[in-house]
Length: 382
Image 1: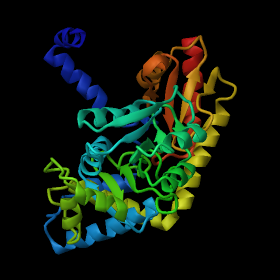
Image 2: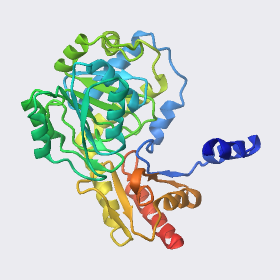
Image 3: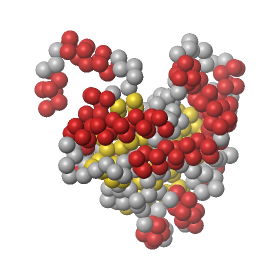
């Protein structure tokens, strides 16, 4: 009701001005965990006229994309390409891989762990959750004890809980799920390409990714990597979805096509980006994220700020403000005065926590500019 009242007070002319203000900032700086900064080279590809996709040339391009995706997932298995957000990939995973005869354990450490919970509730999937406090790491011994109960068929987790910056130990968790023969489903959306992720070696059965994080592309594509165990499970579940029928995608991808019109422009950008990652090397890309994260964290030591999680990811830093600073006001000030976009947080810490992404086409100079803007904002706000 409050939102509606506020909206009706804004005239059509005022709304038009607001839109121009948002879209007309040519020199803004973006440090959000999606979308992330995109290189000029990739942006140029996105501005080209789109080709027709039902051709042999487009099929050849799709085959190359799938091969490149296998490289970044570090898998020999199949990868499904969806035109959807990362949440679309999460829902497709639940629809195709979980049924009412399953009993799922979910690691819920924040907004995106809760998203797994919400999806299981909506689709009537029996589930339990390990609920973690904001910024809390997962106790492996606790998980081992839970998985010893043979009732669990699948474990759902986010490799990196983007809302808090916590990076889970997927390798150790994979050893447990493999030991207990529990299907291991990992949302790697804000982890893959920023932190090490070895799907096959870490016994991950299903892994998810989307285009707007460390891949540094526009939002619009998501990816689901599936091993043989996962594909066998899909064949046993009658999926009640036309668009998210993964078997249909697997079948069509054998001929280099999608069952429905994909985001063709982002396909072209993805193709170039995957070639770029091959050239520089996945290890080099991960090290770049690690270096930028370390530079940022070192640079804020003298500011009235601290780092929330004990085990931060390379992808972003969750920054906690001291009692004199309101995080929401800080984020708004950075945007309005310095055209710099940070990500606020939610929950009980929304006035205390903001997030700074290290993903995308960032440089050390970008970090220096960000730190200067942060210092100025803090001095102006205090």
